[in-house]
Image (cartoon, rainbow, N blue to C red; front, side, top):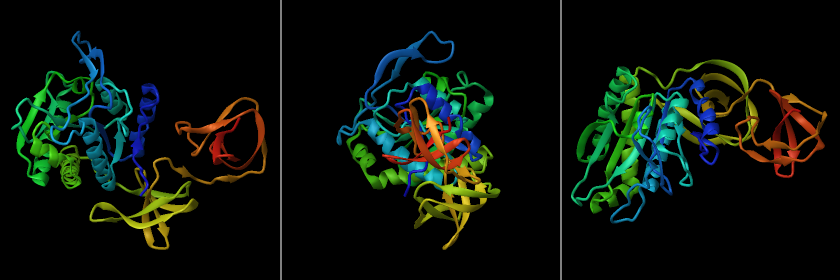
Length: 369
């Protein structure tokens, strides 16, 4: 299956990441920003714990580590976050990840700013707990205290989300519930402008729970419970449906292999088939999802970066007088595949100010000079 979520490459400057995240809300589907806690290396440089505060804390700590498994918290949080992402996408949500790799350097303030910039309907922070007591165990959910919330509405929605998500997480895992807790000392809360919660999945300092957290079966249960709680919060409390298809009668060009999905009982399920690069006729659109007609009937495809409308045929020679980047997809925020030195090239297609050319790395798109 192709990985379709909006993954924010944190090797880019944070400003560029913020610009990419800002486009997430434009898809129409509710946006969930998932923040897998911590990273490979902590950053002890200081930043303010909140707007206007003179108090400072390290930008991001290194997190805890499993007492029995030795697994770092940053590894566990990304493993579970990816499972949550997949389940939320299957329900039709737009998902923004603050990181999809361990090799990042992004502070707690910057993580909150990513969620703000994406216009997230919920900022979901994934962590695990540690304690000096090896007997401590169970899950809890934190939310911003009223004193640091930007509004009463943000506080109320965050508190409600914490209660619902913890209930569904405990129901799915049978974990010990340690309740919900309001906090005013977390930078990720204090800089956030959107509803947000922090999930402590369990104690990595408890040998039994640490081993459990590391298993795929338990991670799947946690992801199911968290995703179910997010969905229940979004629909029942926030009043935002993840699925609202609208008529969309336009050609849609698939630029790579694209999986086909059926929507059954409110979930998008892979049918086990895919389409290769081609142009198809779209009938409906729901966020980044498009309904098309295939040999299997009516199916859905997810195309976060959609090439819609007609792609024109070209036979023109195009002269580039300076070094020019070329990309796999015709979008300015797409990572560059390589660069062309000044030269004249043959274009064979055009779309929205982009030209399709052939390079030594394969077919690529370049902005018209």
